[in-house]
Amino acid sequence: MDMTLYRFNQEKQARLSFLIGLASIFAVVFRTGLTAYFIAPLGIIIGLLSKGADPVLPRQARFGVILGVIALVANTLVLGFTFVQFSRMLSDPVQREILNETIYKQTGLTLDDLIQRAGNLIR
Amino acid sequence: MVHTDARDLKAQARVVMICRMGKAVGSMILYMILVLIISELTSFNLPRNKAAALLFTILVNFVVAVLVGVIQIGLKSIYLDMLFDNTSGIFSLFRYYRENQNSAVVISAFFALLDTICSLPVLAVLIFEETASVITLPLVLALIVRTLSQFIVRTLFFPVQYLLMDYPEMLPAAMIRTGQRLMRGRRMDYVKLSLSFIPMHLLGFMSMGIGTFWVLAYQNCTYAAFYKDMITARTKHKKASAAAEPAAEKTREPLDPQGIYPPPGEAYPEDSTEEDIPSEEDASGYTSQDTDM
Image 1: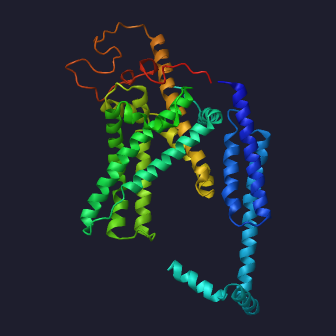
Image 2 (image 1 turned 120 degrees about the horizontal axis):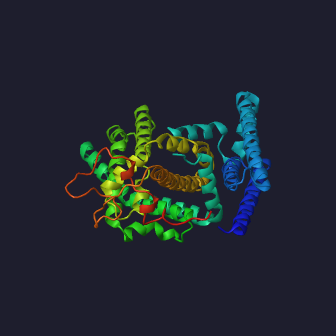
Image 3 (image 1 turned 90 degrees about the vertical axis):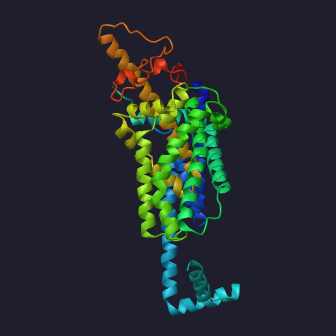
């Protein structure tokens, strides 16, 4: 086996894992929703596979895996916080009315209409 | 017999994947696309009679499983090629449609029959309860039964498809018996190895299936390494046993230089010892080649 080729490919893979981990952090920062859930695990998998026969992960792969895990945790916290805030808004009648008006001005339908349509689709 | 640790097997697989990541993942993607195309091409409107619909579904599933099974053997040959540093392309997926088709079809039909039997509860629930779009408790239970039974079948007959690549002259029935005997003492190792991939599969599932291609490629590479270790360990054990005992003269029939088959007039022994299982020296395929990893 060509060790030079092996090391070259290993470094390439580790760098890819680092870049994907970085991209997943950006996805969390710019609040793209579920995007971080799609790309962070890919970075973690590629990072773990770049270990090869070495006892530890290459440096860049280590950062890629850590960034991927941070992105997953952070995205879960951000989405959870958003969901909690939205639930509080819906349960407050004044805020719900403001939300209904805002969405009506943008789409022609109130929030209650949208929720009803979504419920019909699921059924 | 001293076997290689699961960690070392996975390390071997990772080394192979680093050097040939494109081929490893590309083969898996092409295989999944082919499975999808074959499944879609063979989807028909079911008859109204439920019993007829069930029978029709079973037949179609069986045919699809045989077609896909031959491609699956080609896929495993690609990973075994990578492990032994042999050259082969992604289109080796169709290798067993060109060479040794009879044995490949028989082996695939064997596995297809077992898979169809394992899938009977799921098919029955889907057709008789018409619950294709709704997840119900009987469907979930049927899926669990199918998954567990298919896993047991894979554990019992794991090396059979690899034996087709390594011993192409062996009869399919002998491959199945030999594969079963090879797994004696290694079943728990295989189960532990398979279960160790669950966390990576969860990560692959989270990435909407994109990461699953990498995980499946890694898993198949590891299984190829497991097979290689199984055959190598058996050869070393046989050599060690032979060295410890005085060598006895063995006479073999000239038509059977490898000593795979019993002499004429004798039935194939049911309770054979380890000497009946072929070793690395008998292989005409992969395991007889030197590797330098």
